[in-house]
Image 1 (tube, one colour):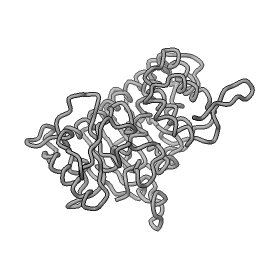
Image 2: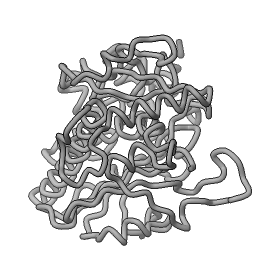
Image 3: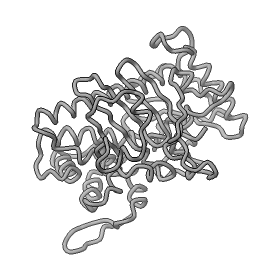
Image 4: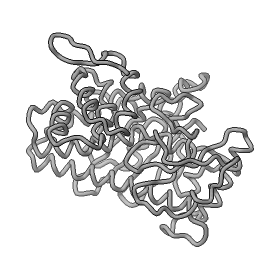
Length: 362
């Protein structure tokens, strides 16, 4: 186990070695190691954004005391006080941390099979192709893509995009116009595409503007501000309205994830919205699993916690040898969800090409 060192009377963990810290975080969170979580956050350099994804994720450590939450939030947001604004921003940051490490969940649903459409497309999302998808067409592996392939769902003023490098969630007509972008914090792909784990824009953006995002939009002076630098805003009331707006966006995103899971489990008449073009999600899931087995690269069915990334599945099934029927039944526990993973042990932050960690190039 990595042991803390002392320097000038302050306890800290090795700087410049974010991967070492990232390797610790899954165990710290899953084991509810409160003391270790606080220690790690207190040990980072405030001027080094490379640690923020792990700090956000550690806010999900289940046994944190109120004073721990206050200390960690104040450290992340450099506030010096524990205002209502910073409390809300810290709550949102915890959810952003989970999303940033959950990209393996969408890796397999984004892959084409059969007639060429992915599960995401059969569910009702639209695949986009843009100049910002690819950085170097001649390169292989993670060096090829810039932001990568994206899949979009637009309902009225609401916009959700699952892209290889980030998730974008927006509502230009909500209580406060807001767009939140959450970076893929995998070390295999995504971590170096954006400098910070999450960004927010308070302008009312149309879907075409979000689809046309470039790296410049995330640089200093661009439309988007890093989440940990977005506060304080003008006055507490203004700040809280913005925070509630982003919290609403994250609820919408969680609802979309739940809708897709229910669609994958369902066999028969459509249960969800009328625009779903393929109501028999279970049949498409079975076809996908069969195609993966046929290609010699099976995808594992897993039951995972809804509030954590897919690090430690509660149970898994290899479609080659295990009974998968229990995974296809409606979920009995609202705190768990169905996921497609690369193996029985889950998909960790330091995922390799074999283990996933990203929405793949198509």
